[in-house]
Image 1: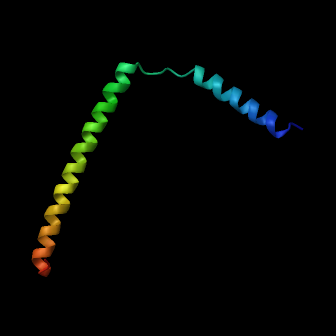
Image 2: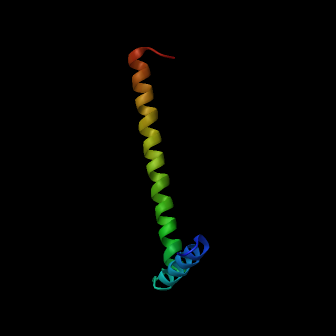
Image 3: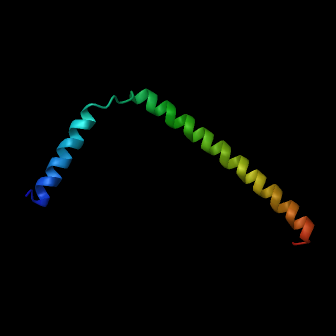
Length: 66
């Protein structure tokens, strides 16, 4: 029966072997994708904030809040 440490070593070896098979993106592609995703996240955050503020004003005008 394998001991716990042997199982961990075997697992880590298999993980390393699988990672060597991965085709990694070029740094330029990763940076470009990160910038694009960040830009979209900012746009969506602005959109949601504007909708939230608009609904807040609308609901307060209906219920007569401050």
